[in-house]
Length: 591
Image (cartoon, rainbow, N blue to C red):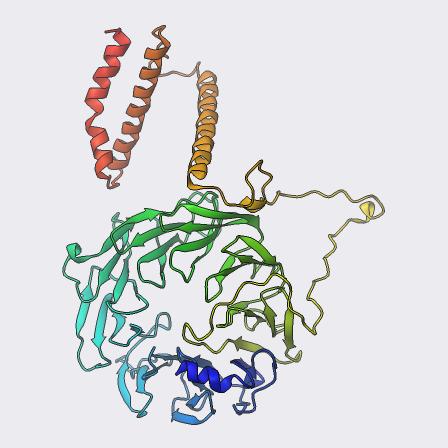
């Protein structure tokens, strides 16, 4: 169907962009024309609350404060109209069979339960298949498997499953102590489910992966990862449904290091493997995205200027982009281009990278952007400034990834723009093309922002400028001045050696620090035994190692006492304590 649609739309414009704002709702033809679509009649009401495309882009629905309408995108023919003036959320099921609508829940005046506010409508017949009470707007929409064989929703900390859009009976329930969130895997059957259960009373939080419908007890889980420090989690499946990335975050960072709380990144695979992704720089995790190829992911993290790194499925770094003003990452639909960007409180600088060859393609700037999206063709990008996030200079820009600004629309100063988005298409409609490095021609001048002049107090205005930087930006790993490294990213072994070298350096520095601390606290009362030397450097080395092991065991015992659950190998270490103490005593006595 999408291929046909592609053929029909090809002569004038391949795709459209709906624009929603105080000027009403209208469709704009995508590249190359950028004109308003004449097929879709503009809805001029100022009350358009929500819009939604079907997954294949063939159907479009919107609510205008009076009705919810569905049109066929190809010929703009009105297919259905529902009398739902209060609807504020809309979503199509993956195969276009159902339109889900949600409106704010209101309880009855006498305190009894209100009217069901989540409705599932059959698109073909217009019939309401089922109504539910759904109080919260967050996660309001039921989740479908891509083939609509199952549909799931979270009800009172349980996940209820329906099969083949039969909502009369609950086919299955996933009941754990308190399921806070769940995500269904994308793609073909069998469907997998990732569930998050928050920790309570000293017990850790955990994420478990199940294969539908095997939910019987903890043994039936495909994988399990438990962790402390999680008030909320974000779970991200890769496209092939083989692994999930979990960003666990706390509301408050107890160390006081970050205003954003504390985040950790975990990797869980359906084969049971799991790991904590080691991020080389401390600070918040701003964004994590899977490459559509499902074999690598990119993380943007660390105190500003933030680092960006691509990791493989072993959670080893594959390429490091250095540091820069960025807090978001976006892979193109085909996965061969990656945009690193700094939006929100940053200036809107973008870096467009060819991730096959790790070459920088362009560095456009889209200042004051509140929205970014790749076009399904993998070549064009839209950036937008929308209300209510920013109420001035609203509008959108369409770019080619080579850095050329192709179209720029600003709404009149007394108007607002609330939303703009691309019409979606199914995978495979647009074939992947070779990456270009030369900027494509454009009739618009390049959007180079005027460099802002730093404020200078009157006393310094006629004196020469001395530039001072708060921090030096770290270049990407293939642009670092390294002898004989060439253009290629470091090999696994080289990275391992580099990490070992850095760890050694850190350990040495720590040892030096400890020795200075020891000498400083010599006159304080000490319960520790004074440093023992046998005269034989080989024996001294053994003694030092044994003491190190015993210190580690001491720390593990403290952790166990504090209620932390220890791993099997850690418990084995504790059991060796007596033998190690005996060995140490023998060495010190010179036996």
